[in-house]
Image (cartoon, rainbow, N blue to C red; front, side, top):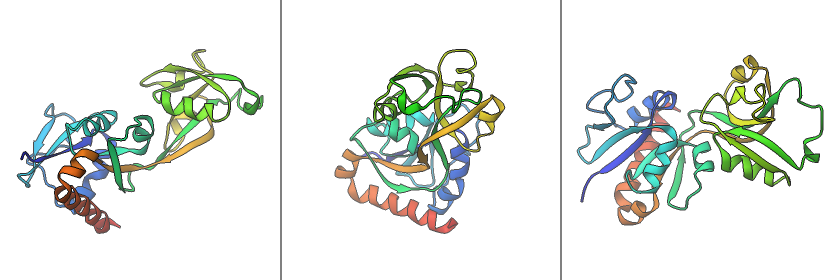
Length: 218
């Protein structure tokens, strides 16, 4: 049987994850947090565990389809990437932010959103946006963007945006205000459900290691 693969997200979360990985006893053969490196797969000091470094949104896909058996991804990704192939047993309490609705400060509060029948939304979270507004009886006309959502209202692409918000400084710098929080977000340890059934002892051991890693930094 081959070893396990741990999928980790590039960027800010990977840096925040460092102390947890240290506490879990996971040490790479080279520094996989080096953003200048083009290498994507890394060995560790555990011969039965490799790490792959991928885009945050791709972690869920790698785990859901079995390319990796365990991974770390944000709650926003899990909300967007709905699948019954992923189990999220542990909140890692890092990467805290929120998925929110925001709009131009000059239009916010001018009318009652509960009276909207439809609204144009710029977002990289089309499923979250549609579900959120559908629950309020509003049809969301989604403009799917992968970045620079904050430009959409001023350029007439959309009335509102749905995006991750941490401090709100980017919204403010672009003339937007946060009008509603859809959900708080933090990073989760996720596992492939098939692997959980076929390799329960290995998966359980790594979940326990991550839990121990969290206790070391608490």
